[in-house]
Image (cartoon, rainbow, N blue to C red; front, side, top):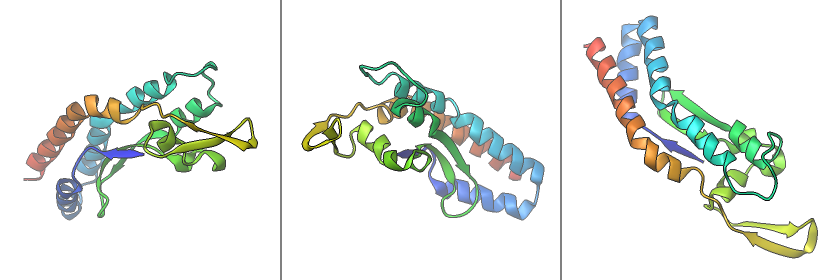
Length: 157
């Protein structure tokens, strides 16, 4: 599960110009400022994950703890995938839990046997934790990313 904060077209253009300049200081500052602009979303998503209702208390080794650990910020400034993204990365989850981030959000159907009994299956409802948080806090981060892009563009020009 991820959401992109910036259209990669602008970032690719700025990145291309930075490569032409060959200025490691500006490149480093660019990545650092992009990361700082989007960083406030990560703790909000993690907090939302931890507050998913459960009969059990929160445990760092449980489902919610592993999903919180798998939440990260990606900043790519080169290539076709240039952009800033917040991701709950299923690849960082144990093998048997890789698809659970999207199931908990409710974007995929979540069926499982009751206490391992393969004769009795239930469909579990999702508890949206990702898109609601990003929908509210995302516009401010998008504005911050655009501000970084504008500042770097001025420095390049």
